[in-house]
Image 1 (cartoon, rainbow, N blue to C red):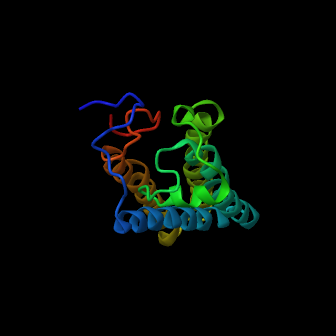
Image 2 (image 1 turned 30 degrees about the horizontal axis):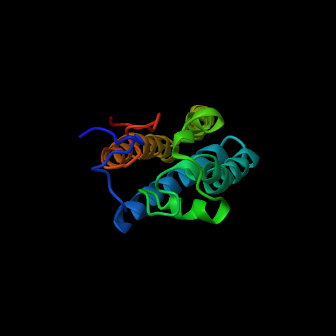
Image 3 (image 1 turned 120 degrees about the vertical axis):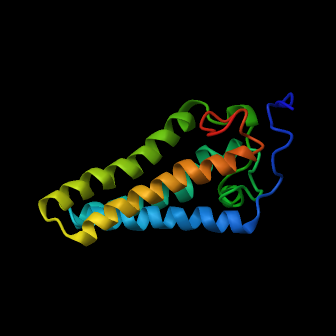
Length: 171
């Protein structure tokens, strides 16, 4: 069955299990922590800025600009952030989801959170190679792929928003 008149996937979950929320957030924390560790080897101030940027963007800005117009606003989505967004803003029209500023913000945010540590951590690793630095780069790539591809596909497959979400990994 396709999308409803509102565009929602009728077979999508009403609520994601707590285990999904924990796993998705664990991977975000690993992404942020390993990314900051890689950047620390290049320049500690950039690592601190990366963590602050990641926490503010993920914890506040994305919750308002993206989650505010999501079906899961004030509900348990795959990350649990729909509940968090209800603390910051009221739910807006679903038709605004992924449009305008928020549509551009999503790939820019995730792209910068992945590329910056890879580039700066790669430079640091190339300058002063150690097996630990090499392992951290490999682990970071694994975490990013798991979070942004594997887990995302699994979550998108059962999401109410998948048919109208511009970033859905599964249609």
